[in-house]
Every structure is written in structure tokens, then in C-alpha cells.
Amino acid sequence: MHKFGDVSRETLERLQIYVDLVLKWQPAQNLIAPSTIPDIWIRHVADSLQTRWSYPEARVWVDIGSGAGFPGVVTAILMADDDADGHVHMIESNQRKAAFLRTALRETGSKGTVHAGRIESVAKEWTLGPVDAISARALASLDLLMALSEPFTRQGARAVFHKGQDFQREVNEATARWDFDMIEKTSLVDPMSRMLLFSNISARPE
Figure (cartoon, one colour):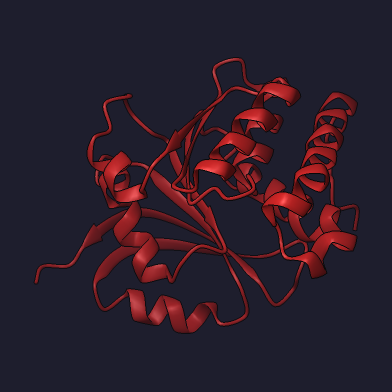
């Protein structure tokens, strides 16, 4: 299967600029695991495309723990060509990675805002209006992701989290503290992994 679907030539050009930036900054920043560099297009780029495809109608995204920008920058690149109102807010506490994210947005001509701070702090002080969707990849357990994104999901935002082959155990653990509706989609990149789409998330009473 072609992992890049109907991505336009313009989008592919932006993605190439982004990948080149990741590889350029990698020696100093260690943005991605060195072992994944040869497979960056599949392991990171194609995997991240699935985030936006999970909620194509979502216009305002918050990507938590953005790191190197997978999937936040990729989501912003996709929306640069197909959604004039699209915007991705990326929350990253590491100042050097935040600087990289700003560079990536500028160089690819994508619309996003980088919030350099802890997820809890940025979420608590949020005054930038409604959020449609939350994303995170390789960040934390599902239970913790639910807690970190709760200020947004409480207001109606949906969430999409990339999870590996241990996803079912994480789902089971999360149900102890959270109620939610979930759609499980097999990853297009790794048949053992899942894209987990959540809506109607709420904390269970203590």
C-alpha cells in the first residue's frame, strides 16, 4: 500500500524540507532515535500523516509533547495546503526542541504556534479559544495522556493517540479512571500498532 495516499506535490515538497531539517539538526539535538533515521519517511512521516487523517475536519489542533514535531509539524504541513483556517499548537518544554519546531514551521510555510512550557502549565492557562483535536505520539501512558489533555477534552476536544502493540493493556488501565468512546484503527505503517481515536472523555468520579 502507498503510505502517502493522495498527498499533493506541494505537501510532499514541504515534507521534504522538514525531513531535511530534522536530519540537519539531528547531530546536535538527537531529535529522533538514531536507529530510525534510515526509515524516517515511514517510521515518522507516514506514521504522523495518520494523525490528521484521523480527524480531517479538525481545524485547531493541540499536539502535546511535540518533540521533533511528529506529528505536530506534519499535521501543520498537511493543513497548509488544504485548510486555510488550520492551525496547530505545539506544546514542548525543551527550549531547544521548541526552537527547532519554530524553524520547521517557518521553513515549511506551515501555520502553527509553539508553546515552550510544560503541558500542564500551558493547558491550565489556555486562553486561545476552542480546540478541535489533541494529538500525541510516543509521549506517555494512555492514562497520563488522558490527564494531560483533560483541560481540552473537557471542553469537547477529541483526541488521537498513536499506540504500540501493548495498546490494549493501556486501554484497560485507562478505563479505571476515565470514561470515553474509542475507535481503534490499525496503523497503516505497523500492523501491530494502533491509532486510538477518543471522544466524550470524562474523568470517573473519585
